[in-house]
Length: 267
Image (cartoon, rainbow, N blue to C red; front, side, top):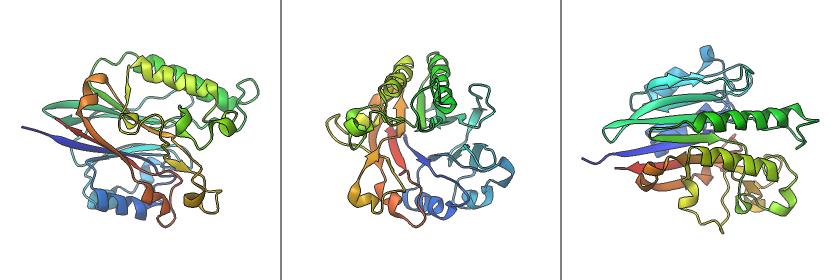
C-alpha cells in the first residue's frame, strides 16, 4: 500500500496577525503537515481553535511573547514531541515530532535559526556570535541522527550563489557571508542530509523563498534569498517526489516576507 505525505514550512512572522493567510493556505493547499516559524505568540494565546477548525487537530507548539516561536500542525497524529533549547538562551526555536508515514514514524524537526543581526563579526555582534553558536550546537546534535528524519524551517542562511539575487553584493550581508554558508553546509553534512529543494531546482537556477518588505515592488525587483529549507536523510531522498515554493502567497494581503515551501513524499 502506498502512502503520500505533504509537508509545508513557512516563516509566518506572527501567526495571530497573519491567521487569515494561514487559513487561506491550509484551505487551498491542504498539506498534511504545516511547520510554522516566527509565530511570535505565547502558548496560551495560540489560535488552536481556528486551526483545528481548518482540519489540523494535532498541534505542537513552542512559543513566547513577541519573539521567535515554532509550531507544527498536522492532520495526522503527532507523537514523541521534543522541544530543544539551544545555547541556553531560553528561546523557542525548535519543536520535533514524529508523524506516521508508510507504516513507520518519520521525525520532523522544525527550526527557526537566529537571524544574526546586521554586522557579520562575532567579536562585535553578539547576535551573530549566537547564530554561529546555534549552528555549532545544531551540527553536533543532528550529527547523531540515526533514523528517518526531515529538517525544515527558516534557517536564515542562503548557502549557494544562486540562492540570492547577487552573491557579489550580498557576500558581506548577514545570511550570505562565506562563514555562514560554510557553517550551514557543515550542519547539513553532519546528518548527513540531502537538500531536497535543490534536487528539483538545478544549482545554476535561482531559487528564493524570501523577499524584503523594503522593496516597493518585491515581485518586479525579485531581489530574493532562499532562507527556508527542507533537508531529508539520504534514505528518504528518493521518496521526495516534488518540492514547490508557493510564491503567490508572498503577494497575499498582509503577507509574511517569506513564501511557504511544500515537499511531497511518496512511498
